Image (cartoon, rainbow, N blue to C red; front, side):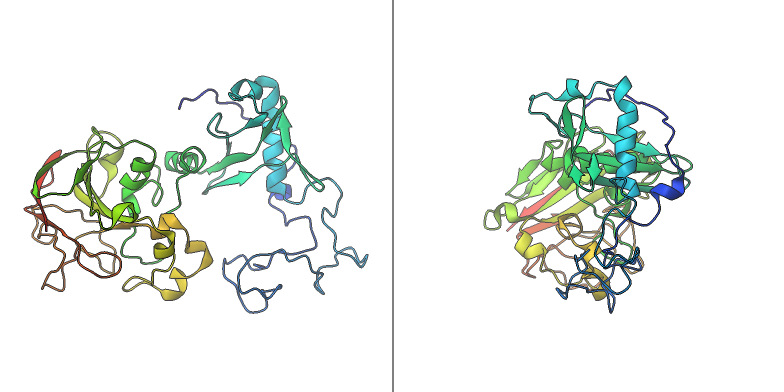
Length: 381
């Protein structure tokens, strides 16, 4: 991947209030208070989930009093000011950039693997998203410039000071298909500052090893037998260990990486040491997982906190809490350097159990102190 252009700034045609105004339609979304929850009275189509618009005229929706359900009340072709804004920005870039030149397969569609487009907008607070662009919403028309159709784009409200993490996070969605991992409540397995897809501040961390594995950025060693294993700092190598049980196959396994606060992205991490990750790739399994210990059942089941990024990638940290503890496995401290076993009589110790509660075949012994190269003994029963 390479940067092929940074264009602008371009001035918007209309004031900010226009783009941030309510949608120009009479069929209101079910989430009328924008809290992300299905509240009483919001299930307009009685299907038990927060979706909508539902295509049904509600008593308070006939804004212009014509007795029918209208979209695009002002007739300008746009329902959402944000969708209008994306088309406007790309249209302003078109005279100074040849979009068609990046349609590598000449199919008339510019997909993110050919050209990733991120629209950056000045704003004090950070916010980002990936969305499907349109040339017109009502009636719907594709967004076509230079004879090619643009579909998915990213936008970043850059913040003050500008957030490099936001840009990287949203581009990871667009270019790598990465999943969101963040939640806004206590969840003991969350990655926090150890993954760009969870916590992406102004000084962003690396991706977690599962995302790196899927895009080919790891050179892992597969552990199926007992022995000593050396793991180099992930920031300067592609090292990782995969604890693999043939009976589980690719549906469930563990990844171990060495996170060291060196001189690049990971220098801002709260700790150094080995990071252990429990990966569950079977959607039927991770979608049905119950709320973890001490996590809110209501929030765990909330629609906005679903998805493989939040369910399939679980960080096995030596101290869980609450409150959240960001320690990694580091033998210089007994609380973070105890042997990681399938079963442990100490109730304060975490264990390597499969998601169904059965003990795995793996034990990790003799954690050394955190360093750019760490060696552990892994026992496979």
